[in-house]
Length: 108
Image 1 (cartoon, helix red, strand yellow):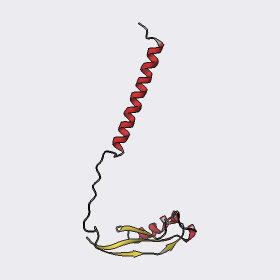
Image 2 (image 1 turned 135 degrees about the horizontal axis):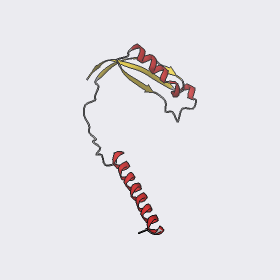
Image 3 (image 1 turned 180 degrees about the horizontal axis):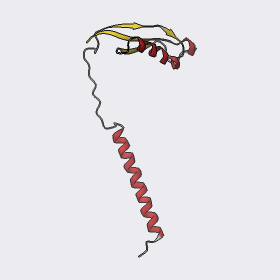
Image 4 (image 1 turned 90 degrees about the vertical axis):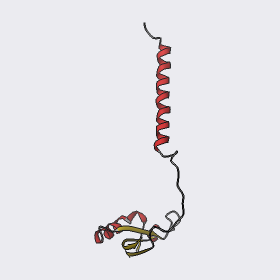
């Protein structure tokens, strides 16, 4: 018994619609929309820290080399970066100020 063309089109449409809706549901679940957010207050994670740093100016797109230098000096140390200027608001990208460095002693 042959299926009519209309029935085949209808079944194909339903299959595609089911896959589309299923994909959307999976993406929403995986993206974390239903994950609860835990907001709390407490003591700071780090009380005191000693940082070896280097002051630098220039575009933020070039700051990777500064962090590479910092990592080569202290490869097992946690890296930290302080950016003084907001990228969208700095008038001269060459004048952006940043401090890349490594933390050497921390009291938790």
